[in-house]
Image (cartoon, rainbow, N blue to C red; front, side):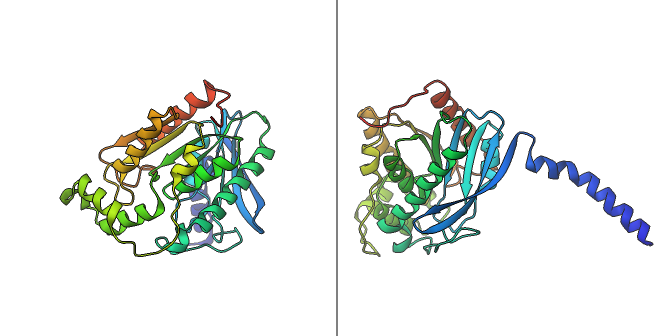
Length: 299
């Protein structure tokens, strides 16, 4: 085969892949890389901006050492939501140190959760300077560990108007660890255990680690912004029914907190392969931001 054959083959391959490459940049939104300071380090992220966003969100990470959540951010942007997503502290292009392991004391102790909430808060403040319409409502969307970080962040910043939490705990960090150690990564856990059994261990098991627990109810009690939790009933990371019980207590008190339970899902409610939780979150965000322009922050 001669050089012309390979040149023509390369051109043909380029032509058939080019439309997809262009679409990844999207005619629906633009992508702009940004950097911002938080607690003495520089964090790096991206802003995805539709032409006329009806709202904006900052994405808050789970516990893993993950970079910016571009796939999830693109899903949001295609729905008309402006997004800021950033590499977690100590990961990718962001400075600082990622505190691990994923399960253990230093990852979810109060110091680290407050540090990560400061990062999220600085992301919100940075994002607001990039929004053309300064009245655009801004909220937080997060996963798993974000269940502790988002309420802390929202209690610090009165500009945060709503929160969406995928598979996020409403129990203390120590209670979550007890449950996670009890399930021990067994995907078939719920085939052989009852909620009462899991609840007993969550409440009473001896702690493998000793540290001051973070209780999200402390921050949630101080908030009255709308919140939506999306749970999978088969979750083996958090005891979902106990978390829902806490939310029901808040609802009785008049808090604008809502939740949806998916009987067949686990901790994967934000998965790109499962569209229903995401679709419900979009409709909820539209309802809260378009129909309710001025949610109040505190009691």
